[in-house]
Image (cartoon, rainbow, N blue to C red; front, side, top):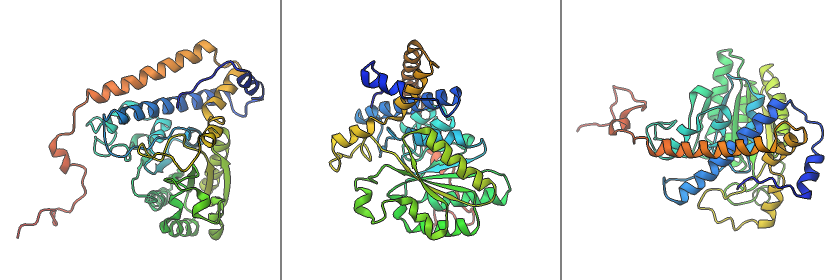
Length: 349
């Protein structure tokens, strides 16, 4: 989904109504630049997948960028982050070099998971990204476990655990919420609610369409957040983070967002209309930030165009890096595997 900003009457009206910015210039510029990098990376990923440059499953983050950049900007350096398998945007927002992410998609040894994880299992300890996880809802109890470690070690760090609206149906969520509240763990549970899980709307799977109400049974502070504006996400995460750092425990955020593409690259998207998709595209978070940047004259049209071209070249450099990187050696099958030497995998009878 390309981002275009034309000088139409509608665009000019949006720029004029941008109003006084809620955050400093540097914050909006970072949001815009990070979201554009995520968007262009994902667009190229989709093209490469269609060209069969790599295989496996592939879930794009296009449309949801404001959720992760707003979360990242509200957190501190030591805070941990964990998500599900729609995980390409998270490490980019946290500062991972996109080249190693592209290499991971290609299954190359230079990838962030040494080519062993692929699209759904990005990981980068250096930026405290504790991984994308392929089992639906698996990251929820694991994220609480990481939060318990932070609490036990008295680091002052928090953990942000992201999940889709489909994952909230997993029983492990309720067990985790109960323990997290009982122990007042420093964790923020983020529902990246794009309304459709794999392809079934929230309205068809539950009588409670306000997913923030799930926290009520555990007396967990919960709220709905506009996930198409990074300002709203930042403020909600900041408030929840302050609560967690005080020792007051978790928060549940039902962040309403939308994916412009299908659940995965194989999704025909027959469960929604083009008009519905276009309604959400009109709320595009990148254009929202760009309107504010233009209204405040923080970047000229020339600078915006130059940055757009730079991002495209960076993404192409990612592809070149990946395609020129080697595949893992065979002995990598036996590396990074936990085992007890008293109980070898191969047993001779």
